[in-house]
Each structure stands twice: as C-alpha cells, then as structure tokens.
Length: 458
Ligand SMILES: Cc1cc2nc3c(=O)[nH]c(=O)nc-3n(C[C@H](O)[C@H](O)[C@H](O)COP(=O)(O)OP(=O)(O)OC[C@H]3O[C@@H](n4cnc5c(N)ncnc54)[C@H](O)[C@@H]3O)c2cc1C
Image (tube, rainbow, N blue to C red; front, side, top):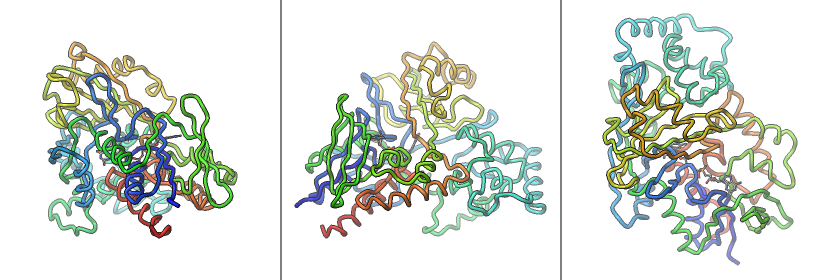
C-alpha cells in the first residue's frame, strides 16, 4: 500500500519535501497554519501589492537546484543583479563587508586605532574568555579576531541592533562564516582571491547570480505547492497543528485546528518544519522533562516588515541597504526586484524592524511603526511623510533562531528526545533551529526524502 506522509508547515522545506515525495507516488498532506504558502519566503497579497517578508533572492552554488526551480516557471526567470550597500556612520560601505571597506570608510585616525587595537588583541590576548569553548560568545570571538576598537565601534552595535541580545550572551556561531574569517585572513583572501571551491565562502555565495520571480518571491513556493497538488498531494491552509502522537505499530497521528474545529489525520511518517520547541511541546507521549525544559531555552528573533507605497522611484540607488543606528536594520526598494510587485507607477519601500516577541515594536501598529521610522527615513533623504500613500505590515514571530551561547546543548537535548519517535523527522530553518537559505532548505529536504524512500525501497 502507498505510504502516507503528513508534513507540518508549507514553507520551502515542507513544500520541497512534499514535491519530492509526491513525485515518487507517496501520498502527501501538507498542513499550514497561515492562509498562504511560503512561510518566511511567502508573498502576502493586499489588493495589487505583493509583499515579501523582507527582500528575498534565490541563489545557489548547486546548478541542479537552480534548474529544478527554474523549471517551475512558464516564463524565463533570468538572473537579476542585486546591489547591496551598508550605511555606517553616514557613509556607504561595500557589501559584503570587507575589512578594507571598513577601514577606508572610517578614515585614517580610526583606521590606525583599528590596527593598533587588533595588534594588541594578538600580542596580549585577554585571559579567561570563552574563546575556543562550546560557549564561545560573539564578544570574545570578535575582540580576539578584530580587536576591541572595531568590536566596540562596529560589531557590537550592529550585532546587538540585529539580534536584540547582548554580544556577551550570543554564541559566536551567530556570525556568518564570511564575517568570521579573521581580519587578516579575509584581507588576504580579498587581495589574492585564492580560495578553493570546496571552501567557497559566503562572500562568494553573496556574489552568485540571483533570481526573483515577477510577482514576488512567494511565487516559488506557490509554484511548488501547485506542483505538489498536480502530483496528487494536498496542501491545506489555515490548519494549525496542535498535537503529534506516536501510535502503536509505528504510525503517527497529527491533530490540528481548522475553521475552529479539531481534526486529526494519521500517517506512516510525519515531517515537521514548524519550530522545534513547539513540536517538542506537542508530542505524545511527552518527551522527558529535561527536553521540555530545553525547549523553553531556545527562542527566535521576530521581524516586523513595514511596507510603504510611494510614487518615488530609484529611492535607494541599490536593491537594499543595511543600516546602523536606525529603528530598522535593512531598507529595500521593491521595484529593484520586480516592478510587478506593486501597481504601475508605484514602488514599495520596505524596512525590516528587528524585535523580540512581546516587545513594543512587535505589538506596535503599522502607523506606530511608521511614526517610529519616518524621522530617520526623511533625515537620510529616502522618504518624507508626504511621499507615502499606503502602509503595509507583515510580521513573523520566528524569523531567526537565536544562537544563545548555550543553545547547542539545548538543541542536542531536543534532537535526542526526538529519537524516541522513529516515524518523525524535523527539517528546515525553524525545524532544525539552523540558519539556512532557500537552496539549502531544498537540498536538505530532497536528501532527506531520498533516504526515506530508500528505507521504504521506493
Ligand atoms: C528577512 C529574511 C530574508 C531572507 N532572505 C533570504 C534570501 O534572500 N535568500 C534565501 O535563500 N534565503 C533567505 N532567507 C531564509 C529563508 O527565508 C528561509 O531559510 C526559508 O524560507 C525557511 O523555510 P522553512 O520551510 O525551513 O521554514 P519556514 O519558512 O519557517 O516554514 C515553516 C512553516 O511552518 C508553519 N507553521 C508554524 N507553526 C505551525 C503549526 N503549528 N501548524 C502548521 N503550520 C505551522 C509556518 O507558518 C511556516 O509556513 C531569509 C530569511 C529572512 C527571515
């Protein structure tokens, strides 16, 4: 008899898993709490405006993943250039950030201080730090790698503005690999560009050709969901999963709420892409108390994206810009991605406001967020109050898994507790509590499904 898999969450990971399973004749039901597919990579539609959760682009080093995605489209999806800037102390820096760029823009006096402070950190390393331990913090790593001056003037303010967590409490694993390369290694790399393919850095990854669909990034997920359904699978929206139970005989039961009613569905296997702490808390039989306590220690940073429609064009002079010392950490211009994301003659400028669940920014209305941002937008010459026609707000509670200094220990406890549920697996950015881009979500989902099909001899 055909196997039946229930997938929790219709983000890219869940949909990619559903796509691969359905293409091999496996019966698939995808349950999604939202009223649209795509999760973090969705596009919310309001009248003729298509709003992404922050600007997204599709890119990959793996040509086969790109080809799989391009095949979903009935028009040619050509690479679109993406230009990025970093606005720091009223100056524009190249992005990806380079030590050379930072030094050049800081000016000669600050540059000398950076170099002296760097030399001090190498000649007289600080003692009793977390450096090299499992709990290495951003603060200890950054001071050892860049010196105290660059840490205090740049890394600390930027990291804390983004994460809303002190650098003393954040794991150094929060810093992307390209930034993590030590100061001189990075400079050497940039000067000599000697890097093997295998170790391709994120610097190179950010320079890959990028793709963006006409009607918003969510079109990728919408097209995968259509393909799942064409292959016989079902994608159910507005279904909030509330329980996952292990039954006798290896089967699983998933309980969910739809239109205010409690429903359930049985499966041979469950793939969960919902946040791992929520999954652990809804399991039956319940995991041990240690795992449940660890579930409370893993949290996500939230994101509020405020969209402002305007008739102004070419506002930023780039696709998006990272900002320091503003209520938002990034500003983007949607016509640089696709003019079809708003009505003709209009443009949407978006700001991403980092926040923690329950904070003032998280609970604020779109008008309150606009009032909070418009001063900086006007000061920087982007938008004045009279330029804005309409406001949009998209919120995501679980945008970024926060790598607190001891998160790995708690995550391992959760992952070990899941071993008692042999017909259950977790995948994806929230499901695995791991930063990953769209292509990686897809590759991991495809690989996982391949191993499951092999186990089932399909
Ligand atoms: C601001 C921002 C910009 C980004 N930019 C890029 C980029 O340019 N390029 C790139 O490649 N990647 C980018 N990423 C990363 C990318 O968005 C994610 O890696 C990817 O979307 C994660 O997909 P996922 O399916 O693993 O998780 P999610 O998208 O989080 O999917 C999980 C799904 O589960 C659903 N769910 C949760 N709880 C329940 C429940 N109880 N019942 C039912 N359903 C539930 C959620 O609604 C969601 O749809 C960006 C991320 C962010 C936040």
